Image 1 (cartoon, one colour):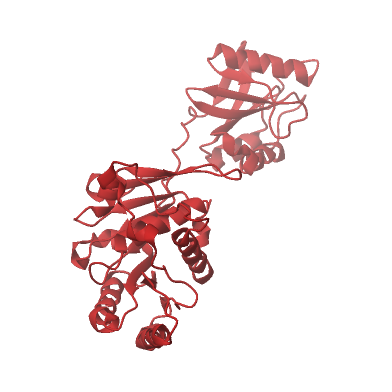
Image 2: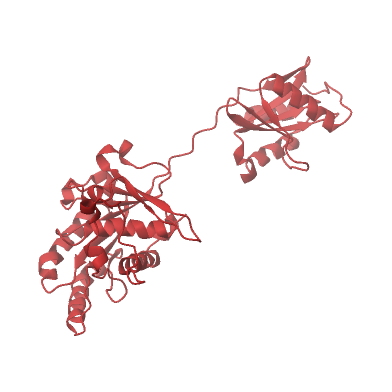
Length: 376
């Protein structure tokens, strides 16, 4: 192994011989562009891509020359290869062989030409590992009681995310399946001159493999069951963000406040790390001071939770609310007139309150949490 075994006039001749021998052994060979650094031949066999470096030296290859090839395979540019083959025309020094054997790399093989054949030292190349399945990020929308717009908020915050460049899907956890009734298997959001359209798929939790959507989905909005205990506890543990919509009315705190507090406590029993936001939905502006009095009452009511829980936040209605609008009031009417499923994002008279409000809500979430890291 430590003496020259072949003699070639130049490196180019040796590369051509190695490429020919690889093809004889069933490899598909491709020569990279001139002056490519790190490898001389790209080869594929049985779906396994490798980088091949050839050395036409008159003396055996030494340790430092092998090390440089190992270092190349650790670079991002080499991520396209499952492994590497180092082929020497002059064999390998004893120290280089000891280095190779002690390294026990599952990616690098050595090669030399013997009796007109390419001999590969080491086991066969292993097929590349499938890409790790990345867990999506979950946002759960809860309710304190019926009629506060949980399903509406779920669908439209997902729509706002899709408009903003998130790969997002919806999961219907509510036994009533209102989300599935309204949107079916999903909907297509039209594109603009500056961005393509986007699809938001709806999944039934009972029909998901391993309880999760396909791997290309990075953000999942869950329309949760109004009965907290009916939600999958293991899924709740995965939630990074929670939204609790409520309404601003004189009886709102009496009817909803205690339920919201209990919902927050229930979430915290299974998930101590999620961001929790309380959102005012179906807001109606009031020219008198009545709405301001109600907002002040709500803020004082939830201040106690905020002091004890740094990831709980009552969203100031002066910053973000979902306003009452005809678009949202009649959202879902398509199930009666046979129209296609869509969100309440179409403009009326040149304006669209729901689209503006939900994009504003998403902007608020991005400013007050790390949710923007999920954007493509």
